[in-house]
Image: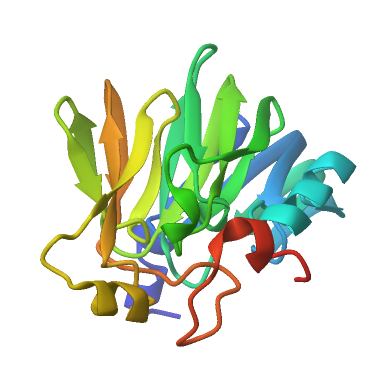
Length: 240
């Protein structure tokens, strides 16, 4: 049988070391020998002796926080020995390696999978106030290990060495040590500010030394109904 479908670039990629790696730009491969954490429902295929266990948001403490904040990562523990393939609506996938002392603040909706050696907590985004339709809370990852994140389109990584402003719905993740706040779009009138639900009436501000990852798309906040503004994370996800 012959087809361009069977070209080398589409064949399963093999490695000598277990762990999280890219099969291609839109599919993740976990060569599993132990356990890993992944977004619930992200598995598209697997081979070998693999077990999946739903974990909610990663423990009872994080489950309660998710209900109160609307933020978090619905997780499953993937354990055993074999190959597991993950994807999320054909989103672009990127790998980030964290070392001890690193801390990454990331929108929970953009977390695809991570090593079980990493720890994460749901924390308030400082300085955002109730104006943020992107929510008040983010997931902060620490420890040593690899995390796979998703973006809609090819992102840009901005070095924060001067005041930096980003649409809150385009901000994917950033150095957790950065100072955050919001900046009003002065060119918009108050009526427009109150009437919009896209987040374009203001921008997130970042200061300090670090980076911000920005995607070329403005995603509505998770759980927000079309045309309705989410009133911050504290109430928006309470009954979800």
